[in-house]
Image 1: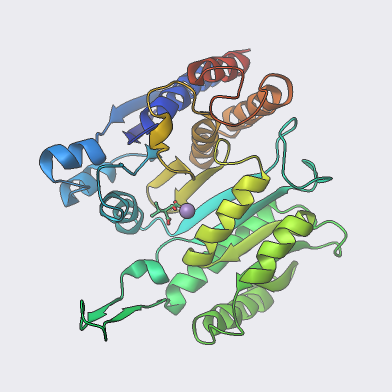
Image 2: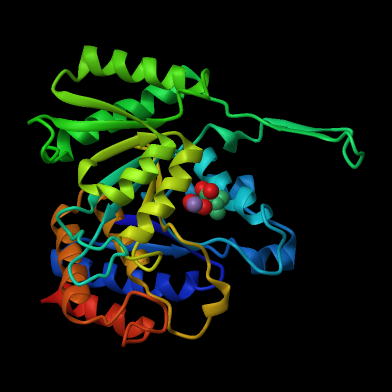
Length: 359
Ligand code: IPM
Ligand code: MN
């Protein structure tokens, strides 16, 4: 019996979450596990009504669950930053979800803007550190509103944060890594940084990377790429990558790039993972306010997030079945992954997956 907190959130979040839950229920029936779902209304509407984002009491409630399924956070009537910091980042930080795991995988039948690259070439995962960096809110203004105004926002990391993220990434490369194609016969972990400019923060990352790698993971090949070059190679030679580990800010940026190469925000899923605690799974795109309520948004990113959730809970067979169903639907059903151009409505796509899972 899994206790799952469901936070549909804003915009199209609720519509795609309905489909993810539909698929989870089909998987539970088929594979014989039970779930108790509890819905929470944290989001823009609640904030407008009550002024509350995610209160500490809400965090304590969420802590009681085995996992959290999140739709999207972000509301057109609320100033940018309030809901993001007050709900999404608050949950990630308070629940110490220190890994943001974001697979970049091109499913069959999906168009990628990278001509000549297919499912064999676009298949890697980004391990994004999820608690530090420019996201800590360290900094401030002086002389605000004057011509001499100064704004500072610091990239902050401590050795502990860096090490636990690196160890997760090495373990991931050990367990799930595929022998990196054409680059020797060891599984590969690539560190994405910027050691030529961020000579403190990424120096710390690089030293920790090599020290841990050499002492604890001699069987994992280590590579280093600057973040700008990473972007270039993700487009030119995505087949070079298998597991990429990076800091919070670079991870945010490169996973949007990765998402578009795998077919866009309609399919890109992620997990905010606390390996020892409560994890939270969410589509990596936003709340897409302009599509809200039209029934045309693609629910596959939410469904793939639910699939990652089951994998993390240990329901590997069910997770695999959902992924196969997604591959079947991308390969033989959908005309496009874009909202309004799938050839099916949001709920029809959910039905297609749920039926395939039940088979
Ligand atoms: C993401 C989002 C968030 C982030 C925003 C909404 C705070 O872009 O999950 O990638 O920057 O982490
Ligand atoms: Mn992002």
